[in-house]
Amino acid sequence: MAELKLSESRDLTRIERIGAHSHIRGLGLDSALEARDVSEGMVGQTSARKAAGVILQMIKEGKIAGRAVLLAGQPGTGKTAIAMGMAKSLGLETPFAMLAGSELFSLEMSKTEALMQAFRKAIGVRIKEETEVIEGEVVEVQIDRPAVAGAASKTGKLTLKTTEMETVYDLGAKMIEALGKEKVQSGDVIAIDKASGKITKLGRSFSRSRDYDAMGPHIKFMQCPDGELQKRKEVVHCVTLHEIDVINSRTQGFLALFTGDTGEIRSEVREQIDTKVAEWREEGKAEIVPGVLFIDEVHMLDIECFSFLNRALENEMAPILVVATNRGITTIRGTNYKSPHGIPIDLLDRLLIITTQPYTEDEIRKILDIRCQEEEVEMSEEAKHLLTKIGVDASLRYAIHLITASALACQKRKGNIVEMEDINRVYHLFLDVKRSTQYLMEYQSQYMFSEEGDEDDTNAMQS
Image 1 (cartoon, rainbow, N blue to C red):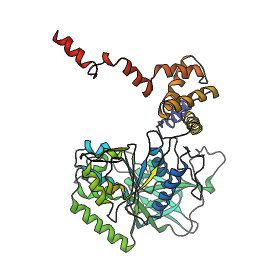
Image 2: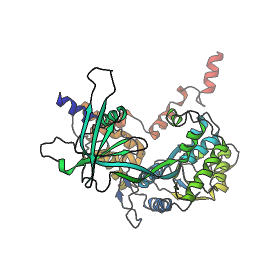
Image 3: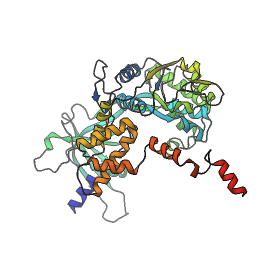
Image 4: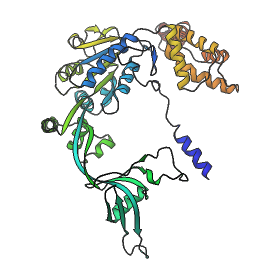
């Protein structure tokens, strides 16, 4: 039975799925903001990564609001990868909201409201408050259970100590349940929030660390707390402005955050919240953390969205806006005018533009090495060389797709290492864009609604 439990817990830790950018852990820059050749999953694009590093420094200082950055480059040159690298480098406390340009048109609310909510999601508020906490080492937990079930509720006593004092607390049914949930036993160092009654297990006391105790790697040993049992502690909560909006605007309050039913939020609610947050800032209770809003495929936005962005960027509560596009000179959606990247000139003028360059053969090889490692595929040198050639001739994305496919082909022939024959097999099974287009050109007349075959179809139907 014990063996079964062990295998179950091991399987649970492997549930993490591998995504297109799951190998990226940062921008791969050193302390002087110089890009390392291969670092944190990033390869090449040194100038683009350096520029992103400068933007990152700006965000971390938090002094500049409403700046916008455009990542422009051909498909498959690592624009989203750079944005993901920025998100990972910022850490957990800085809000990072991601949005695809086409998402705005499929929501049940107006485009400008969806954009406004995205902007508010990217601005964090760090709220400080003082709470009273009882912190100490558990000496004894004594719970008296009634002899007859249901006759009376459980009662008990909890003995806590610090280096200077020891106190016995009477426990009610709620606290007994909370202690049971946290599996608190004598020797644990715990903290109890006086206002809410929440129990937090901080660790285990050094005095109770016996050699024969069975412990997991997550158990932290610590000294018995000193001073008094009751302490005043400053607690910091990090929330986004959007979360505050939702809690104050919906009847079900914070539950709306879980159901996703945020709906349209009235501007009066937002104005009141902004006023309140400004008051907290003046009192020193809160500070604003401007985050990052990343809009991918920004050419999908229309002229109304672009004019809204122009206005929103001028607001002092605006986050840093990072947008990405792979279009050249194209029509601005909602108009008949053409513009670089499909973005109006007045908005382009506000953007700092970072360009990404196509990857060299050597860089493609390094990326494929990282992806093989991420997808846990063992591949021979010849197979990697062939895959690199395919990446140069077809596209990097196509080459990356073939990694897992070739690993499955290798598995089919009961092999351990992917060889050239496996790559060759999947290359002929799955077409890339060039070969697919070539095939279409050859057999165009046999497809429905093809331009060449229209006249033949009409004649056939008439006869």
